[in-house]
Length: 129
Image 1 (cartoon, rainbow, N blue to C red):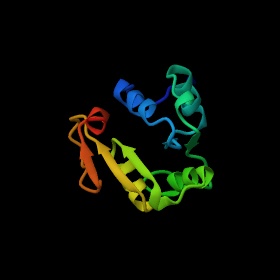
Image 2: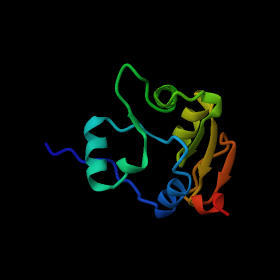
Image 3: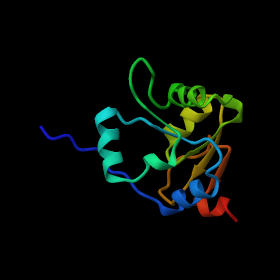
Image 4: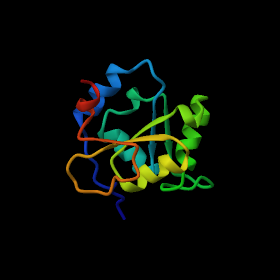
């Protein structure tokens, strides 16, 4: 049986944002299991933009629990209260909030429930103005 990852979108504005703030520690936090993450990172040039990549692996609980974000903060040696999370899903937003972090929702017009986010913007471009 061939394993295929969930469909993902690549947004150039996210890379522009990361590059603009490259001196700030960055983590990619995903609910992907190991093989999904490996396939994704083979398809998209993301690894170079992050200091840490944390994915779902027991005993950590996946999103919407805060474990993955807390693990990333621990590795980066940053307090959860100082972390700023960027998410595009309600599950991810809840995960960031459950970790005690500030969450910015990127609403690309997909009509998801972002009411738990601290801030909602249409794209990363909005944050760079």
